Length: 157
Image (tube, rainbow, N blue to C red; front, side, top):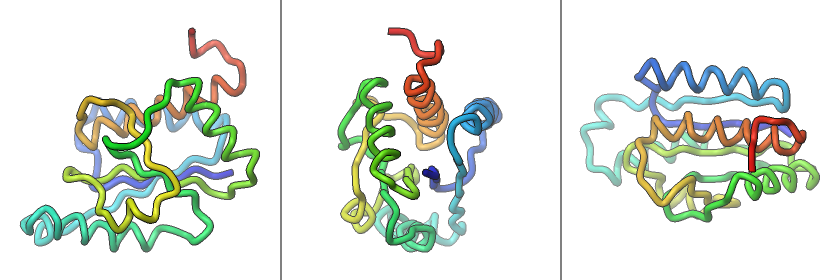
């Protein structure tokens, strides 16, 4: 199984970049993990929020394959404890899923056209975090999930 993380716009804060880099390197021990960053033009960023999300959706569509298991990270999604998330990952692996795509939307969320196509909607917290911070939190939880599946000492109950 492969995992792709799609994110909108670049991560600009060095501390977040460093954290994501650390967990991305660690994930290589468990799974094929890649990221795709969609950049939007300044022209798009000056449009109303709905138009921005629609433009992002068109770019997201270009990266998706029909067989993908798409998981949108959205504040209205289902929440898991870390052990439950590990089981979620395990179910995808044993089901023969070729690629799981996790999507972190832009600053205004994910367009409804993409949410309606998702296989799952996942929330990392009831709290609201910036779309850039979620990248680090997600990568850490993904690493934690795989370390749980391998019975390693990273996760403590």
